[in-house]
Length: 257
Figure 1: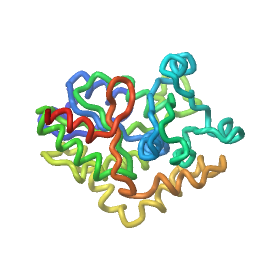
Figure 2 (figure 1 turned 30 degrees about the vertical axis):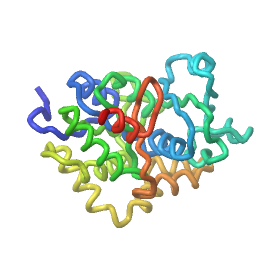
Figure 3 (figure 1 turned 90 degrees about the horizontal axis):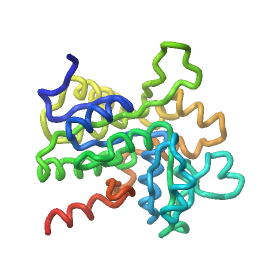
Figure 4 (figure 1 turned 120 degrees about the horizontal axis):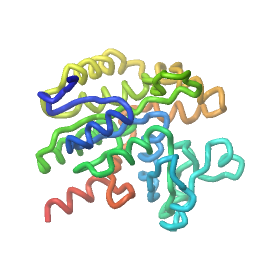
């Protein structure tokens, strides 16, 4: 059976990868560069409270339950000047507000793996910081690490076709994080690191011209693509705790008590 089991640091794709990691009890780093991960990092950096929620459940009802605002789609929210899945819609003016954030990829993978020992959100924006947080947690929790690039979903799959579309932005984001993780890497993780190392001098260009980047640009969200392509712009590392994201350092303080 296919397995990266001999190695303590692995990379697995999408929802299936998130489930496999959760069943093993790994520390999980969810990577959805365009845009769930980048949005969560940016929102938490701005002082917001983010509650991830899968798209197949009633996010509006859940928002009422937690006293937060349900985030609308990019285009709809932009008309009303509201926060959205677009990371650049979050700034310090929203500090202290609660939001329920759903997405087909990052939020779904988070929901699948929400019972793991620790779940972090990683992106290009916080690649080194998320790896350092995972290294600390791994030492304290004695658990392996799986980085989960979420990929995208094909909009019109035919019968018997997979819906997962692997995306270079998530692969490069995963490779960046893996490059700062301690421990022996699986061959899959090593190749992912190699992709990042060979591309890091032109990350923003590659993200800009990627299929996902071109899709967002065509919809008028060029600023998102530019923002999400920045390497290590933030030290903020979101960690899932009681259904919302907190700063990972808060968990470290708790573990020291």
